Length: 354
Image (cartoon, rainbow, N blue to C red):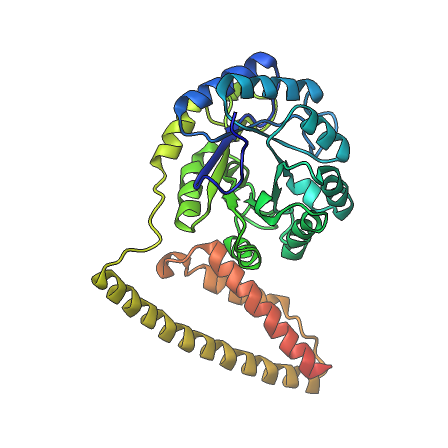
């Protein structure tokens, strides 16, 4: 069996059950996935770090034996999540090809360091999920900890699974794509794999998120699949049967980076010039707005009035969001822009008043 090497296959498709629950469920799911011909690696949750105690937290070591059996039956490499050195010890014993660090683990530098040291010299590939909270430095710090113990950078990859979001979002975990773009700019040599299952929290949005990832030049997908999702012991709503997984992957259009066509280049440059002009005007207007905010700060200071005027902020927000449909811009996008403008405006007024 050929040793798995991260980066040799793009796009890389990883699939398997959120949790391995029984030997029969594990083998049936994995064999059916292998038969689709679209899966490059099998995944399975053996230890499940759940939010609340008392929920299903995985079957442990015997699940690794089932995954190892699935590897022998299908010839596909296998990957599991690890959250401690003891988990790593078990994974290595059962010759797991790849491990990933879950979002709940990435937030803990102590746990990440422990896992990194346990994996040192193992030759096993490591995928690191973004932390649950939108903290790029924490995500980058996890990468650096694995690199620092001598794990080759080519054996480390990234999984973008979305972030917990305080506010309204139709997804379980908001993608916050710009944060992933920033992470890619810091580690351009690393694979970035999208996890639409955890982003969506529902099979309804899997295709649109998978296509978005393909259009944004991601290097692969990790999608949860179960032979009988309605009876799954964890995350039933976001898992698809192997046949649906095959249709999903076949429906994703992995587009070319570019084409050598003068008309294409000319059209692209024309629209890019237009965007550059709009950006110049947009940021000039933002600069003017902040100068007005500073003048408001001086008026408030002269009259000994507090900076934050909640009713006024509410009026601005409601007025702008009410125009969402007319503008053709999502409420989520408008709200994010408004929040950023509001924070900067308060900072400007605070600098004037203090």
